[in-house]
Length: 110
Image 1: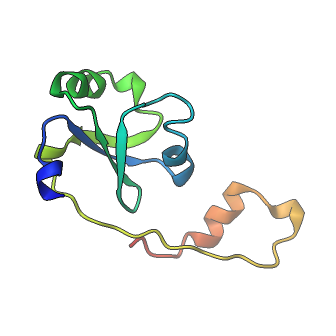
Image 2: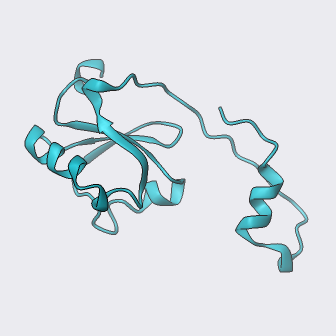
């Protein structure tokens, strides 16, 4: 896979969240082949370096979905993991993304 990642037609990025990563194809943000790289990182194969560069340069197409995006031949790929936090006993009136962020604020990112 390391040869695959060195192609100039491959972009690597870090999604804002798992939800963002899971909806890239469904919402038509991208139609290209993707590979999960661990954590919130994903590789996108555009098959053509020109198309990859056009997508990369048009930040308005990807900034709402990715924290960062760059060519794979210019990035070291570090594999990550996503920890799962199971929260039990939260009353329904406190089910809110802000409250869940507060509960996980002390956890470490792997």
